[in-house]
Image (tube, rainbow, N blue to C red; front, side, top):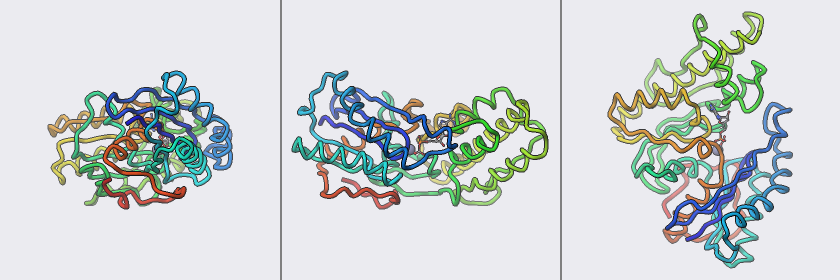
Length: 336
Ligand code: KG4
Ligand code: ZN
């Protein structure tokens, strides 16, 4: 089945063509830049930008892949969770296009896309696996036993890991998005003499909490004048604290669950220190580690086309109505 995937849940407009026999044929992404001046995503600006960019992006994708619209067998779009207005743009276009072509349209859960994204790679993970999903909106450890079979083993009680990067970067004046900004600044810094907490690692369980870490960074930023050197040192300490916390919980979850495969997904999964640290942890445990290329860690259309392709090929058909859900628990999903 040849599937067009559409992702518009936040500030990235992503589209892709996935063929269930031939694999990923093409993908394209437009990252909205206008939000940087506001230090975070402005929902209304995001929706308007998706409206302007989505159709031309699909046009370019189809032309470059040499695929005509009538060759499509289905359209998959992100139905949630995310910004309601932004989701509506992808849903409206995806569903109208599908209606016009007489093919099914499927609303995909954004986190299912992230969880399955590593399977787009040449040596991707088979089911079952343990997944660490770390993005701007979510931080969770999930037991993934098959398509639509997800159990949450632990999740953040407050801020997501990506949010901790983003908010701390704002405090340090390093710009948006904060993850890449912090890791770039950290290259020139040292964490020596800066002590930040590793939240919830001193007690049992797999939940996370990053809001206290963000506050600790804010306090540390006020202890000394915030010059470039201090900024780099704080960025380094913050990155180490987040990575350390995530690695401790992954190790704990692997030992408790007995999983032999660990998947890192979501935007924070692009972080090099996190990858390096989890490579060490998994090697010591004899567990295989998988992650998508950095472009498929952050939001993209390929992961939505892929999840849609799996579901359509398994016989799932589109449902009526737009059915976007700004909030949508992952555990409400079921197999096709
Ligand atoms: O998955 P994603 O693109 O969007 C959501 O679904 O939230 O994740 C975006 C998040 C942002 O918080 C961004 O700062 C973070 O991923 N991020 C990173 C890196 N690249 C993106 N965090 C740490 N290191 C990176 N290299
Ligand atoms: Zn995402």
